[in-house]
Each structure stands twice: as C-alpha cells, then as structure tokens.
Image (cartoon, rainbow, N blue to C red):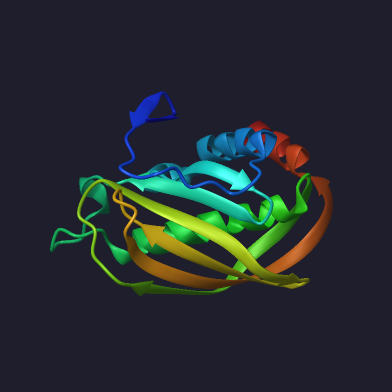
Amino acid sequence: MLKAHGRNVKWAMQELRCGESNDELLRVMKVIEELSPYWELIGIKVEDVGRDCAIGFVEVGRKHLQVLGTVHGGVHAALVDAMAWVAIISHYYPRYVIAVTTDLTVKYLKPITEGVLRAVARITHIKEPMALITAELRNKNNELIGTSTMTYWITPTSKALNEVINELRNMA
C-alpha cells in the first residue's frame, strides 16, 4: 500500500520505480503539486522520480469521466505531459530549464472507468533544444492501456529549481 498525501492508495500490482529514485527531487515535486492549480484540478500526483524518468498517477473520480463513463482522453494527455515535464526537470536537476511541449500523441488501447490511471515517462533522447519522451499509461491492474510520445523544446536558465520554487511560493 502506498501513502500519497496522507491517503492510502492501493495498487494491485508490483510498484514501478525509476531506477535510482531522487527523494530530494520528489519532495520538490510535492511542492509543485501544491502550487500548480492545473495539477490540483486534475489530481496529478508524482509517485517517483529518478534521472530521466517520472511516474505519476491520477485517482479516477467522476470529474474525470466523459459522458459515456470512461476517463476523458484529456486526462490521459495531461498526466503523460506532466510526467514528461518532470522527467526533463530530473535530467537537469538541480538546474532549472524551461521545458515546453511542442508535440504530444497518445494512443489509446483500452478504456478505463475507475481506479488509478498511472503514467511512466522516460526520456528517450535529449539534445538541446529538443527532447523526446515516451510514456506508458497503465491501470490499477498494471495493464497497458495507452502509450504516448512527446517532444519538448528546452531553454536553459541560470536559475536553480529551488529558486524558481521560492519565487512561485512568493507569488502564491
């Protein structure tokens, strides 16, 4: 059983991990979860982060369903996009880079109506200013329900990620 924001999240599968986890960066991502209105709206949570990898999830609720009762494709896209961004941030950490999605494709293989939607994003190739990220979407039974490829434009900055977090906190 996983503890996520004070709640127990039951996974009917073996826990996925990003190789060598970066606990310091995971703590920073928990702050970003709190500071991001969009992540909060969708319910995006970061579960694990390691160099070039991020795993996150959304606990599926009624607000995520389209009229036919399955999770809206936009939820899938938002989750893989967020985890791709986290994977890029992990590549440069502790430096901060601006990473902007330039292309995102999701292939839907199986619908999901309840439980947990989970994304595992990994950097496939990175050479500034471009990065290619692939992701898998999985349900609570660890079944592959979708795949995604994303391209990001990366702009280096002179700031550290912690500086940016402090600036965001001051604006909130």
